Image 1 (tube, rainbow, N blue to C red):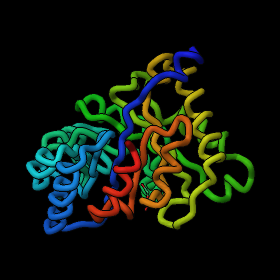
Image 2: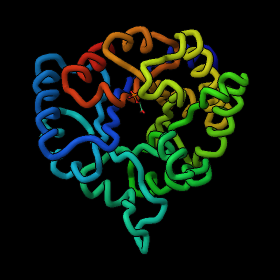
Image 3: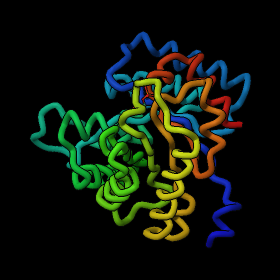
Length: 256
Ligand code: PGA
């Protein structure tokens, strides 16, 4: 297995998480990104996860740009009495191909446990969406030397039994690196991604060897190339720097 894994080529994914940012007028960023990608085709898959209100309106421009769309969260049920929530089927219907689940902001702000994240990922798969499952340690957990233990337990709890390389992407996002401008050293990223890969292979065999593992947390055009060069980093989940086409394209173009 180890030899095979070393030679595997996994197409990178650069995903933008717009969080609670963007009105209809932000469509111009999708169009601008499309123009850049038309001049220089991306070597990676490109995804934008805007607020759910924008997905349907971005559909045509994203298609023209060759950019996939995704949601930032979904409910675990298909439909029902859940005021304010959105199901995976609804995201799919609006034009999404992916959905982020278990982002640390959801885990912290909405008390989402790994069991909930797993149910959401299952709902995403059921609806035919690719689930981007986020894991990551807090600063206190890192300082206590618990990073790998935390990641391991989040992976064990958040990944559905039927996850495979086609329906699931993992995003490692150290909580303390999100929106702070801080990033782990490339050695630290390599260590965590290697551990994640080992867990995935152990649980899913060859599918685990092919599953994409993104790094997220203060990815910028200036650090994208060094982060993407780290073994087992198969792309990026980008927050702040995904809001402007120029910055996002700067990151995408590091994946050549
Ligand atoms: P950031 O956010 O790039 O703004 O640090 C990343 C994320 O939360 O997905």
